[in-house]
Length: 249
Image 1 (tube, helix red, strand yellow):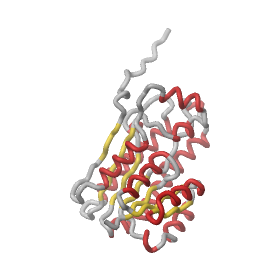
Image 2 (tube, helix red, strand yellow):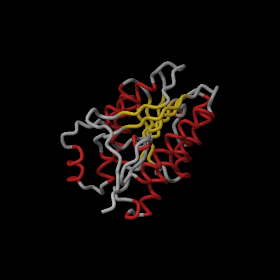
Image 3 (cartoon, helix red, strand yellow):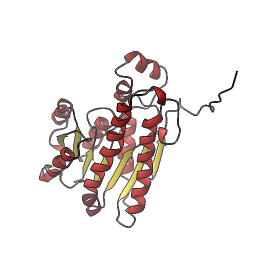
Image 4 (cartoon, helix red, strand yellow):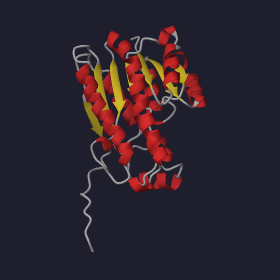
């Protein structure tokens, strides 16, 4: 095997676990992210199988420069995992920050489409694969989800559109839609509120980053004629609640 995977947002959570999972299977791994020290730690851990590429995915010029600068041994990208993304805040729409909304759109939507578009020629050439990390929020709205959920619905719909546009080219596309998963994601969303983090996950037996990494690995290692269009994954402890009903007093 001499395959290469590029994982955005590899400095924590799903991305970091996915880098470890694929390197353990002998893949060459390109890990991207803004935090140089985290990427350096992965490089030290994973060795020659790992190439660290530090840049901000919301910066188009930096993204293009980083891809252009990939060393020869890592230029043949077979799988793109669009994992970089974030949620900011849990307030209802009238009480949210417009800047937070714009940051989520810039990262979860604009950054994702930029790196995808830049890599499409290589992925078509190599009959590769795109794995997009969406969310159960793509399908199930909830109070405080607002723009975060909308960005993930975009990711889900883009995955379907790419499948259609890449028809006949041998490129596979999957949308993975996790539910409650314990990771640094929630600390970012709550502005580092550890009490809120602990309360959310207490007793829930949530999914782990390794669960998602193993799922991505399973999807990517199916035979070339098999495409998993989407996978919605929840912990057993999570399911659907009733509809909200506002009643006049």
